[in-house]
Image (cartoon, rainbow, N blue to C red; front, top):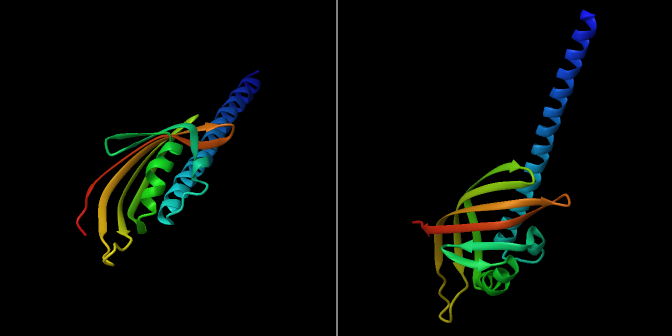
Length: 161
């Protein structure tokens, strides 16, 4: 009888341990997927390209930037981001760090960075460089097995070169 009880306890412990391990493994897989979404968006910006970025955002996403409500990502893309990127010669992130926390079905990220923009030459052939220290927080949601950004907020302040 004691052997049966001990066996039952050991099996329950094994089951509980395997479930915890499975949850941790899934969380790590989800965290990697979240970081990939965020990296894809950052890389697109650095490449001054917006093609394919809409799939990284939910249809009803919301974008907030430096005190402004920009609307959905599609609206932000058409009325703000795409025209702005068209004025840049280059856009680079440095000192980039990201933290991600997964709490299914949501994930929360915080990015800190310095971004440096070199504007295209003006009519006189002069360029201008802008450097800012920034932070961005994003909320992603996993829907139908796919992570998408549902809300993102970024702000920046001047950074001395």
